[in-house]
Image (cartoon, rainbow over all chains, first blue to last red; front, side, top):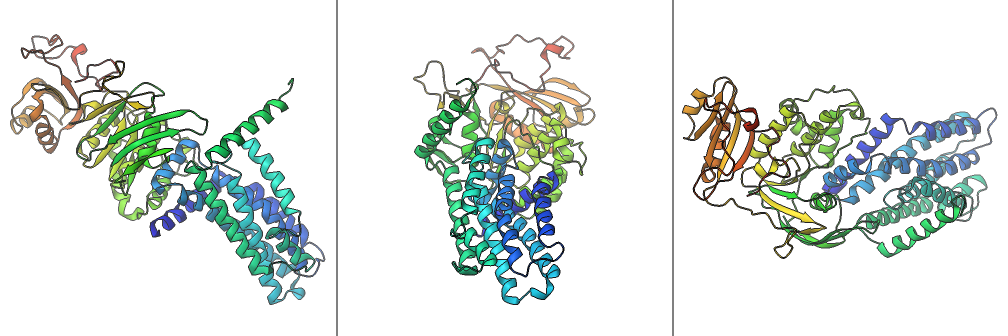
Length: 243
Length: 314
């Protein structure tokens, strides 16, 4: 167990540094920081309301990070990492850990920027709510991104369309925990699971995503995957021009 | 390690392995051969723990595995030493403990790439060397190598042959150059359509795992300077060629391991180890093409890649 945890952290460092050096993190990071800058420009709304938007945006950004990390290595190099790590669990956990580190850094930027820009409206309770909501949204996004990638999706295009659809539907449902409720509680003050409840649920969602990814890597859900592949193949054939 | 009843079907539905039973003996290299699509790469991935088989069991799995796949691409932007450090940590080890050995191996293999260049910009040969060091440096209980000699320059190929010959512990590999079959005590298995060769399959005759009585090995060695003084310190053997830097001898199989060890201890490097099939009367099966001066003709010189696919097995 200890060795697997160490391997997971090592995989997170490996993939994180690879992502950093390949500069594939720049687009989502710049997009996020630009939106945060826009949110807190001029005379910002009192805290924690602007954090609702920055927390919500961390949901797709987390998914983007996790997807990029899961796809960072090519298929052959990935077999080396899987072998060295002793199986798929440390590798899948490493993806989630590295993505979580990324969203935590961006979330911290949003929280600190908000406190500085709207100093007079910051409260200790609001600050805690804001930090937990950012984490809840980002971790859930990382979970979604790790599922909509290899090994569940072999086609990048299908993974992108499916992930975008999922993110839009779940991210715009204010009643849906943990992302919808976490963002809504900052914006309109509507109750939900509470900031700790949302974060706990996000961690559980990440755990569920980890289980699914590992099971698929171990050959699980074979029948479902065959059906899914058949469905995607038929759909792509229908969409092909001239059909 | 023992692979028991291994079946594997890829996500695409292609059946790669159909009930493989294989013991990887730590005392002898296990060499897989077979045509493309036979399932060699998948079997190696299963043994390395990179792929979970659809069915079957791996008994006594090794704690630490060193694995290098075929056509290791390394498109990563990480510099080679950073990548090696990361892979050591992924194995749960400390890079400080393995760094010195990694440097030695890189030097022995003749690694010529820059340390601060991304791996994606290294030459094919240097990437293969980095991959090999990654697999060997952690003192693994089992080394799994898929076509390890491919992409290596000749000198590095010779060094790899020596490193594998000196290694103790499990070794499972595929090799279409034929070099692995010459490793001392190598056990050869042929794969066809996802199955290990069986006697009932006329197209897939299993290779013998032990040389027949009376077999002779041709050992081609690289020794610094004139090898004749070195010869005096080695056990008796039939000398085919002894030139500065080069020594070729024929040794009966029972003595070949001890002879190799003595030669390595005397500072020689192993260039190749090849069986010389002999007729019942004790003469070599192949005509002896040596010239009367004792200097081998070019056609008789052992190739750096000793045996091609068509070369005789035991």
